[in-house]
Image (cartoon, rainbow, N blue to C red; front, top):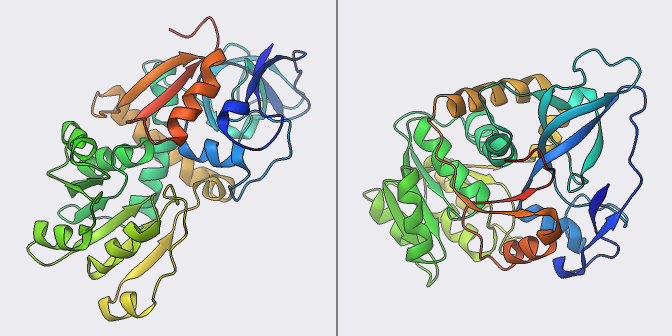
Length: 329
């Protein structure tokens, strides 16, 4: 089988494609012929050795996949050969066949295609977990989404709309932010030249945002915390800007606000049943045509290094997918 391989930590252009022996599942495991892999910004951090998850090379990047079960190990009864499934791992999915624990795969509804499943699995599940379980976002509240042009940011815009929030999409330029209007953002703002606190305040009549969804970090995060409303919630999702801000704790104090961590991978590991319920809602939206995911591009496995290079450079708007197997359409 072919696999995208990180032999040494660094930039995505160092990745190579290698031929590896076809793996076989052990007890409690299944083999999945991968159709699509959804790429995310955190894949570039893992490849660089700058993520909280730090595997030793060699390994494959890629944290979400869709495909079909081709073999099952001993003791597996939850899925069978031929089942269409999807799932997420911390890394290791960018290869033609993966071995995963059977209790970490989700059977796909018949009317949710492989490509759509890989498009929404991690980004939408992260956004849903953040906005529902962590922030308790309520219909009618104002949600400001930083990094709204990216994969998880654009998903948060879409989920926020479906939850009944008024969504303010924020990105590094007016053009990037404006693309979120198609997903239901009522207001779009640029923070490329500063002033995001004042712009969020102006857009909310001086009140501020009830919830900030923040996969960016850096100075933008500090400005957005200052733009929270009374009892607002700032969701710490990631640090795409490359720096972790030092937050003056007097800001949440005087606002009665909360700064809330969102560690999606650990949530999936610790609260699998809740994650499955979240996915059921997301797939229900998908089958009813209510999601508006933005797909930047679909490229073959051989072009995985180039795709991750585009992600690392911030040139991807929405979701980037790898088409892995011949069954992918």
